[in-house]
Length: 564
Image 1 (tube, rainbow, N blue to C red):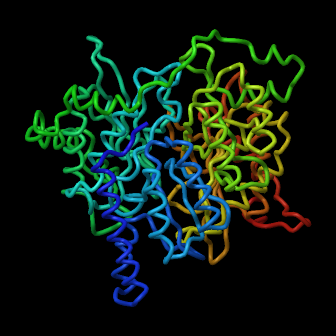
Image 2: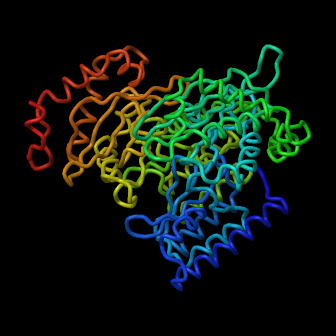
């Protein structure tokens, strides 16, 4: 993984010193809160509903074990004993004290981490495939390119005051596991007919108030021009993106207004002045970065049937089936540690669990971990012969729930329990659904399904691309939940469609149950929920869900008039 050089260390140290003085001046009332807001946001510090929240950058989700241990230390010393992994492969701490934040950043710097550009109208953390470098279907490891983008975009003077935040994702495999279509820029590594490496370049994707699937603006961009072409896109956005209305300030709105052809024409025109300029990548520069991502010292092993070796152990077989992923190196596997145990908010991990995951990484996976945008943690390089021992240990620490890709492996934002932007709570909805469908046999019968929950229209929970999406809304001061179906991420990304009037919180488990009943009744063999919903349309789901009133616990009917 990438390691800081002298310039990185110097930049981070200087930024912390600058920020420490800004905090001192704020605490001494030498800065007003209005003056301080942009300064703290530049360092990842938000004021949320109850306390300050610090968001820490995890570049493309890749962590060393010492960095995970630092998260555990921060959770234990400065927070309430846990952290929350996010859909941008970052981590958030929700209960930090302002006066302690410079010390937290100093602690982070000791393990080559920071919180720079995790907020504000700038280029955010570039996300990627959590199985990058090990995936069996990988074309080329995307992480060096993500690292080049990170270095280029951090403190880029032209792009520190964009119309709105800007998100980039990069995928290097046949299967898109980075959700590139819902990003401002989505990059896919491809080879042309000559075998040369380049990128399929998408722009204008995003969720929020106006969810849009990104458009391909170049089928093949030679890798040498990654930065110059990205800069051309950013310049067009920076010049013409709307700043009069924050809700229409994203690049997706600009691209939609101009049309794909005109937007592309402007980008290409801008690129004329940049192409082959000083930011053109050279083989030497790329090799410098690629050297940081060399594969670990794998043993020469053969693949083995680990389930057969533990014949009759259904629990282990289920875990292997759901949580163990194929690896390009024979004899190895990637393991997903589930942060979705029933009763635990999705994405949350305690300090003890973070220390434990770091220990597992050291003993089983060359000391590295990955954060997924589905809010789980991956050990990418586990010997197949050690899977049973790893499973036993992970299970004892609540990290081996065999539900990856299933109903309870849901994405969920912090919602109204923490976020000041949220219209409704999302974590209690996730908890109620997890409790209702805790039967793993039933979940395995349903098969893969993505249930995504957001507490507001900003869509941090990716509800638009969930097989089932749940959006918290406010109606006259009350919390209600709008449901959409048929959304999808990945190669066949799609925006879900709303089924009808919203529901109360206590009705949501029954709503999910009714949607599943329609799916189980109507699906073809091996047909996913998303495919089934897209084939049938909303009508049969809507008809069944609203056919009879849904009672809350205790028999009270809510919204009955709307459903009959």
